[in-house]
Length: 358
Ligand SMILES: Cc1cc2nc3c(=O)[nH]c(=O)nc-3n(C[C@H](O)[C@H](O)[C@H](O)COP(=O)(O)OP(=O)(O)OC[C@H]3O[C@@H](n4cnc5c(N)ncnc54)[C@H](O)[C@@H]3O)c2cc1C
Figure 1 (cartoon, protein in one colour):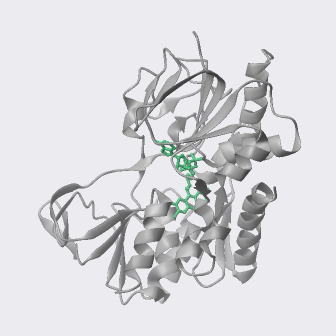
Figure 2 (cartoon, rainbow, N blue to C red):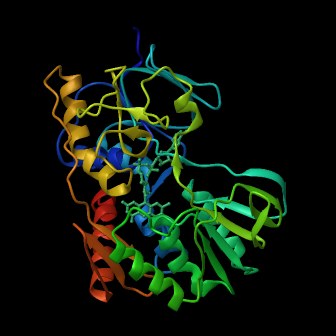
């Protein structure tokens, strides 16, 4: 194969930011390396609810990529990836450019389940890409309307808690129970906080279509309004499913503990776009994969032995409660208070500031 690059990092997700952070302090592996990103900055999801609530400025929640890549000694290619050919290790961009490399590393995140739209009089914005949500939210604040958030997972709950005091009415709609799959204590605390902040909660309603200004579950109207944030579950990006990689049942890239595709060893995949048994899909695990990925990319380029990523059994969940505090859950223990809010702020800011300190 006549590859132009030794390594292409696709997407500026959490793990790739961790890799670049390492290359600021230790020499990066030899070879021609580039990061392909669809924007000039990488947004940090953990701070997004605080940004929308007005607690952070946009520049505090994003990492400018040109300076980061320059300091890490790699090229930055800006463009949206729309295709992958795993057999030639190449990536195609929306503007027609095609890049190939000896090694690919994919950290492009996920997208959201789409709703069936018959006619739409709603302004409907998905949580990803973050830049689109931030823009829409600033525009919506000029004419605040009753707002609905669709999706009762951690992202939907945090956004609801952050925004409920900013709109005249906020409704959080969940297909199952709110925070299903999280410890019962966290769910109870989150529901208490949402109710005391006057959020309306609708559980067990699987919204599957939009008709005019109405959200429908089958033929039943669940909510009517003008502004909707989609925070439904993560699904694979369509262009990643079109390749001939090995996938899990849901279409995410199946990887081995070395973070390599099960079908194509020259392709690494991490974070939300990848699937590894016992590894949940969230920012905490994407960040943790970053340090093993950095090690393994260097080992791959230098033809050395790769290491295994072993997901930790318990991960800390910290959900901002919208009032400066946070709910914490770890190994089945849940607590809430302002102290945990300050701790969450410190963890989030230290993650992003370590990368921005160039
Ligand atoms: C509001 C909100 C709050 C959250 N809070 C938390 C939290 O507190 N803790 C937690 O653990 N998880 C949290 N999550 C979940 C977390 O955001 C995701 O699990 C995490 O972002 C996944 O990281 P990633 O590195 O896989 O990808 P991402 O962070 O999604 O990054 C993917 C990157 O790839 C780029 N990209 C995507 N498509 C393309 C393309 N076609 N071409 C080029 N570049 C592309 C994107 O621009 C982005 O920079 C939250 C999610 C949301 C929505």
